[in-house]
Amino acid sequence: MITKMSHLFIGGDWCEASTGEYFDVLNPATEEVIARVPDAGSVDMRMAIDAALAVQKSWASTTAAQRSKILLSAANLMRDRAEHLAQIMTLEEGKPVLEAKGEVTYAASFLEWFAEEAKRVYGEIIPANAPDKRILIIKRPLGLALAITPWNFPAAMITRKVGPALAAGCTMIVKPSELTPLTALEIAKIFEEVGLPKGVLSVLVGKDPAPLVKVAMDDFNVRKVTFTGSTSVGKLLMKQSADTMKRISFELGGQAPFIVFDDADINSAVENAIIAKMRSMGESCVAANRIYVQRAVLEQFTSKLVSKLAEFRIGNGLEDGVQVGPLIEPAAVEKVELHVADATKKGAKVILGGSRGTNVGYFYLPTVLTNVTDSMLITQEETFGPVAAVIPFDTEEEVLERANNTHHGLAAYYFTKDIGRVFRLAEKLQFGILGANDGLPSTAQAPFGGVKESGLGREGGHHGIDEYLDVKYVSLGGISS
Ligand code: NAD
Image (cartoon, rainbow, N blue to C red; front, side, top):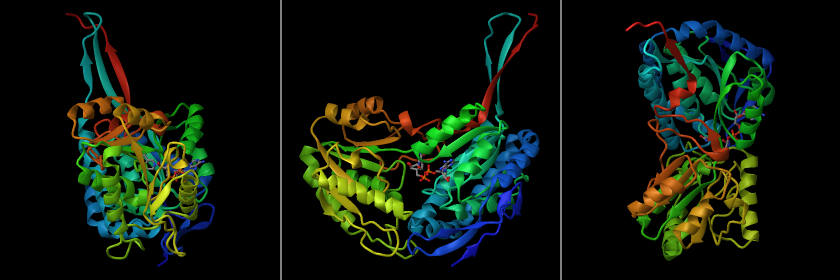
């Protein structure tokens, strides 16, 4: 199937790219071209900026109820279109269609959540420093925000930014990954259909992100950049933000430890390890990369994990019953191969999978490695693939130190029935998201984000909208008593 999406969504209109160029979108399961999309250039980015600035004031002065209504309608339309959106997502990203449908629901939940939060942007009155003064706090939208999103959650990473931005009264330009532009353009259609005023949201897709993004990064009027993607690009954008002092929120890479203590419910730990490891074929920023298992339950945990993963059906995500789809591109498969080869060279054993399993499509079989040590690449870098690296440990102190021994700090998981340990580790694990007996902590209600080199700022929860608001205070004088 080839879909030619012949337009970009700029200023509420569907236009050709100023470059006149198109680029191909591939299905990672078949390596076939599924669409050709316009390749936006700097002129298009300028047009999107101008369109947003033209409506920023009027959008900021709408009532919270008006913005809320639009977001809620978009959430509902997104749910109505779940099947259609999921098919498109599977075609361009590869995840099994059932999982893609789950992502659409998850994506819609951010629009719904922020539709509600729009109404709760409260101010404050603070006791003043003088009898004739009053101190009032108000929160105002910070203006135009640029959103740069990755391919691994092509819908949710967009709505997690568009939801709070629009709720706060900001305008937004979305630059999705060049690997998954189709889902992003479908989301633009939804906002058009629910009556979002022209210019409030633009969606630009381009083959070469650096020059396209740079136009917005250099523009003072773009007051914020919100980015989800790799730590290396995050560092580059942080430097680029400095010249115009933009507000930044960055959701970056992870290297999540998944710790199983010997008092844990092992069946539950296995089930949750599979969710934390295999969701989106392991291509998730919160994917369990290092599975630490206390020695007394090592054998039991590993054999249960292997027997469950051995039953997983791998294939084209559009086919019924497929649980593991392809990785996104050849480079992703090569990275997984590099991590497995490095581990086996240093003494790890492959007890399940360990190869591509097919010549067509960017597949890699669900894999389990044992005898893994902290000196291997797989325990140091983000693998982004379906490889479970099982590592034995002896004591709580030891595993805590090993888990924290990384520059990343996005998510960590631990399984134990000891309530004291639940609290101790919550305080001592240096990660922004902690799954205590939970392999799937992501939800619209909670503040998602990392510490250390995994990012700055939070998305979701009531915290998420603050990232799009300026806090101002009014010192009101001359009040006689
Ligand atoms: P990426 O950094 O390569 O790309 C992300 C986005 O940045 C894309 O839109 C891309 O076009 C753009 N980009 C790439 N180079 C750029 C440049 N020089 N200038 C401006 N923009 C540029 O990341 P990816 O491969 O798309 O996504 C995978 C990464 O994202 C992983 O590291 C993963 O952990 C991370 N991620 C993090 C979260 C989170 O919430 N913390 C969620 C999902 C993904």
